[in-house]
Length: 250
Image (tube, rainbow, N blue to C red; front, side):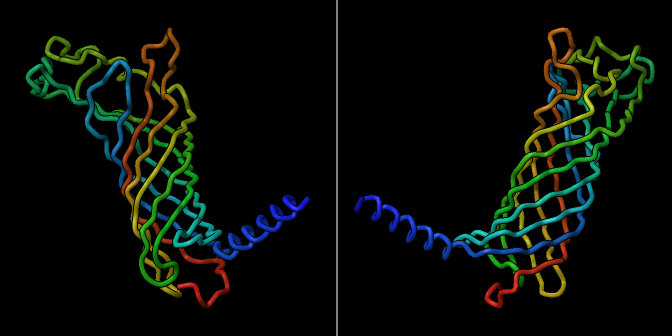
C-alpha cells in the first residue's frame, strides 16, 4: 500500500511539474501565401526529366497550442491552388538535344497538372512569438484533388525521333491523368518575422513526396510508379484573430 501511495505522490508531482513546464496558448491566426514550385513525376519505367516550374497560392491558418521549454508548438493548415507536372529532357546518347526530323527543332515536351492541395502540419518554432524572429520546422500529410491538365510540345506524338533518343518511354505523352486524388508527405524549414499589431511573415522552403500515383500501377498498367514530387518556395502572411492574454509572451 505504501508503494502505491508513493507512486501516486510521485505521479502527481511529476504531472504538476510538466504542467508548469508547458505554457498553454490559444493563439489563432489566418492569412494567405504564395510562391514558386519546381516539380517532376517519379516514373517507373524511368522518364528523363528536368524540373517543371509553376505557381502555388492560397489560404493559411495556424493555431498555437503550447510552448514547451523553448519550443512553440502549433498546428497549421493550408488550402492552395498549385501548378505541378513534369518537363522532359529529350537527349541523345551524347547528352545533346534530340532534333526532330520533321520540324528540325530540338524536341520539347512538358505537362502541367493543376491541383487543389491541402497540407496539415505540425509546426515547431524556436525564438520570438510576437515581436522578432523565429526559426521553424513543419511536417505532415498533404492531400490533393486534381483539377485539369495541359501539355506543351513542339512535335507530333507519331513523329517523335525515337532513333536518336536514349529514353524511349513516350507513353506518358498521350496518357491523361487517371487518379484524381493525390496524397503524400510534406516537410519544410523557414523563418518567421512577427511585429505587434501587424502580423506574421513566414518564408519557407518545402519538399513534397507523393505516395499516390497519377496513373494506374497494377501489373497490366504501363507505369508501376508515377508519383509527384515538388520543391516549394513560399511566402505567407498571417494576422492574429485570437491571442493568449499573457504579458510575458514576447
